[in-house]
Image (cartoon, rainbow, N blue to C red; front, side, top):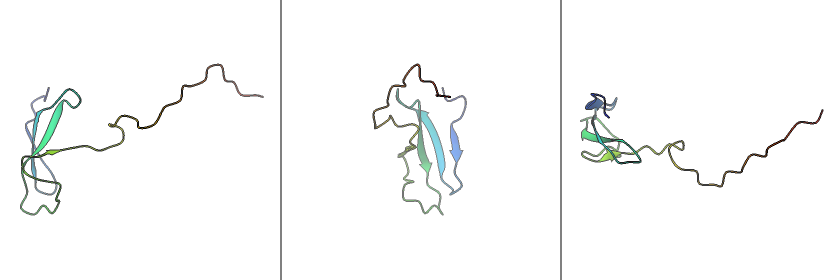
Length: 74
């Protein structure tokens, strides 16, 4: 599943490791070692990083059903 990737590094100096995740997210990214110059309080050693992008979250509002047979008047 991880296709050979085990570690990575961020621009702030932190080192990442990739672990098997859950059914909802197949890969978990964990801070393996915090960089000495990293000022981000979200980077804590041995804690996973989470992606809060809107595209990954389920919709929070009802999606309307598209109407069929709609044509523009000319």
